[in-house]
Amino acid sequence: MEQKVSGASLKRQVTFWVIVLVVFVAFLYIFSTILLPFIVGMAIAYFLDPVADRLERIGLSRLMATVVILVSFVLIFALALTIFIPIIINQFNDFVQHIPTYVQQAQQLVAKAQTMVLPDWIRNQLGAIKDNFSSIMSDGLSFVGGLFAQIWSSGKALVNIISLMVVTPVVAFYILLDWDRMVTKVDDWIPRDHVASVRQIAHEIDQAIAGFIRGQGSLCIILGVYYGVGLSLVGLNFGLLIGLFAGMISFIPYVGSLVGLILAVGVALVQFWPDYLWVGLTLAVFFTGQFLEGNVLQPKLVGESVGLHPVWLMFALFAFGALFGFVGLLIAVPAAAACGVLVRFALSRYLQSDLYYGRSEAGKARRAKAGKPENS
Image (cartoon, rainbow, N blue to C red):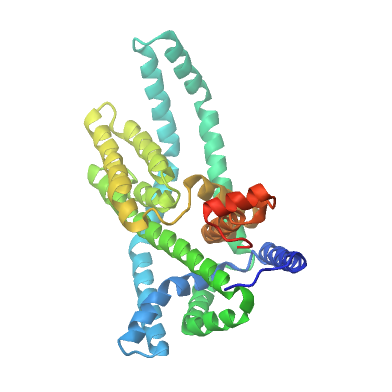
């Protein structure tokens, strides 16, 4: 049973944790350009720790389990890079080269649509789209170019591809090897008066992060493969690139399917028009994927207990991305999950406190009626 904390003690604790938070945020901001391989290495170790625990249970030492897991992981990752990266790079280069042609064909489609029998307001809107099409495409390409430039610059300062490939496995190896000892040591540092609450919070944060990222990560891989293969079978130009991109950004619920649908239908219109069949098949690929995501994959892989609302997730991605660049995008989901757990914990404590019930006789009566003991 945890002891009741006095007002002065609570104030000191709040001050201490606020200072810790400020120092942590300042550390992330100052060293954001060199943190990428360390964060990726820690993330890999975190997600592979359950596998290491299973291998230990069947008789392997922690060292041997760590070596087997990381060697297998590196080999699979290298094989995937060898197979897919050249294809994706070629499709991306072809896509960039074909953009002027697609813009011209899209303008021609809009011009043809204007000749059809349409209400005046639709005809006027099509005319405005045609007149501003080049400007819209230029702004869109500038935005995408700026986004890639920001991602590149955030990793280019001191962390290039070589350091990422070399430092990340080393960090992952040592953290995975010492993971259980690190957790035990941190647990020993927890104030004994609050050990139960801190363990509960840590357990809920672990469940939220693991449940969301492992589940949503599996969902992204499945959707990326499905969209890539489906669009390629339809015969869509750059289908693999668009499909994998749609799956990758499906980390943000519904956004991946929407962006992928817009890109795929846009390419399908200029490629297949006026053959409606292939445009319809492109739509069918995404509608089927959306059905599978909402009714099969999301409930099975992610579930309802994670507690990360899509709006809160999008806000976290934008906020951390703006503050810390590409590194911020990597820590946004764990930070959002942790904040969600802390807010729910604070709210539960508030709903049991005198501040909520009141300290008057009426407040005591309300507390007694709710079955809550005093000073809980």
